[in-house]
Image 1 (cartoon, rainbow, N blue to C red):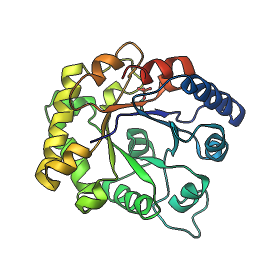
Image 2: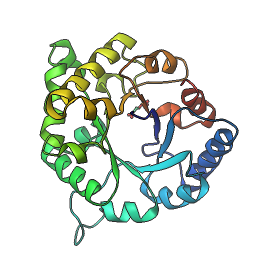
Image 3: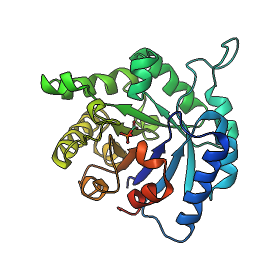
Length: 251
Ligand code: PGA
């Protein structure tokens, strides 16, 4: 059966020292509880190695927030999936709307990144989601279907089994405006129906689909109570251990 996952996305926040403090704080708070979900910390690249050493790997995994679309070579400033894997990180967040919008990541680029992540043993947390105008024009289902099919549906059922999906309506990210519980469930059920159609019920049932976008201590319980919401990708509320723990314990 699919896993519940609560993944923090620190984005471009925290110096190395601040990040280690946060990781230690999360780790010590988690040590006293038996979380009902896999916990993931999505840190900046330079934090990963130290954070991996700091946390209890039985409860907390580490994610990169991106990887290169090339395997290796003369690509100044890039970080490959193999490099990320060599740090001990287990996951990589791919296709975040900020990367799509600010760094021009296309469906084709994200397909390359996904393949390289998987070939190097990383588990992608693949983000999808519509912008406000797309929801208002009622094209949000088509948009999400296109994002998933263009970057992921070349994968075999076996390989697709390694993918975690994160539905993040772009209008809800960092805005304090969360999707309602019904809107989240409706889209998550739609996404799962796409997976049933493409890969069959078993793969669909085993795929974790996270919700992201202003998820916080106040709304996590209601969101996670939905049948097809298997956890969250948490931005702002992952930057304070206390807030993040309140989301983890919403399960
Ligand atoms: P937010 O970010 O929780 O701050 O809205 C979520 C995300 O972008 O992953």
